[in-house]
Length: 584
Image (cartoon, rainbow, N blue to C red; front, side):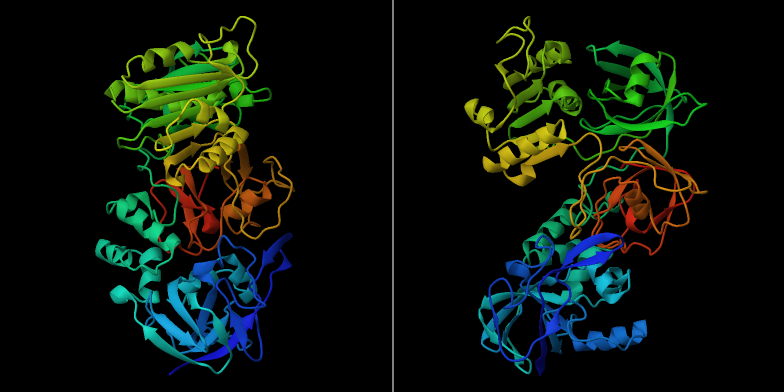
């Protein structure tokens, strides 16, 4: 019979790790006597990162003494204590291969339901003094699992554990864990998993996303990685010739680019971007990412680039690049693309953020869509309002269109109700005033503050999160769970003497850095340069760090449990094998 061996609790604490402060509740210690188990946790217990741990469906973490014995032998360790794995319940029995999602158990006077396997992050590696521990738990099929509290009550060490109900579909914790993290991912098992009501919402979303991939492994693991997009049409860079150069406004220049290598181009999806290498051959290349600003066929691409006050690349484009010059282009990439359907389409942009949504408008006009299309754009004034006439012409082709343009500081010659519709900014009040439909698909691009404010406004208005699609120019926001906040720093070269290794180019950050042997991974190099990064496991499991690999090759240590999408890289466990370009 299964038995509760130890009840372990602990409140979050701050610890020092790699010159940073980590807030974590993974240190748990046994307690004597009965403890009250409540809906969200056990009395005296807490979680440091509620986004990744805790909550109603992850109230109590369970780990087995059989796994303790397994890891002691595998790791050659004998110093484990109850709570070593951050678990609340150390138990005898309840093996991951036998316990099923949806099973219910009575322990003491409380009743629990199994909701999901553990999602293991880097903090277990800190606690175990084994950096790859997150990957090892999955590879060896010993993740442990979470309980939801069905009936609150008291528990204590020595209590018997009795199963009082069996979960539908009889899918074990081991099977569910393997289905998410390890290939293959059979459709029939994904469909079965989605029939289990007790399975937590996050895991259900992951399995639904994997089903929607339609068995296309080239797009990676949609249950873990970024939104799937088509594989890049080519690896590395191809030469493109500047066919035309157009001054759209005083500070926006468009380039019409055509293939220069004798091979046909490929069509891009509206909303996608390309990585561009600029600069004379005698100087280090400037690597930047730019959205395509019109529906791109195979014959040519259009990039529209705003001159920034201290922008080396944008100044080079405006002042030095000439028709006939050659630039190097990576293949179109990105998942900020139009979704099929019948719902209204709302295109919101500010400043040069107009470019990807303008490409979408081109595509909608070309297909003669009958969907309702809303065009909402913000600019300072008419002098900086790029593509105004082009947009009016495209909207004129659509039978069901609406348009609203805001100028924040209009010039005296700007005509209200002709050149622009209102003074100010796009915000929640304006969206409500002009009756923008809440049931539409929303596509947003612009400065970071614009994106944040509009996304918050749409959420507050009741727009479902999966209908809000965003594209942010420049570096994306970091995701570093549990790390104490620090002041934002611009990307920079790492301290010390440049490394002797290959060149690593961070395209969005505009930074070229030589690899050195002191870095264990591309993630560590990016962190040394304050390049914004996203991660959680740091060992090739969670795919939060998945990023575009535009050019070059990498090796992995450890190997990822599931490969990233074609043209992507897991930077947490990758090292460069020659010069590379990453979309970071």
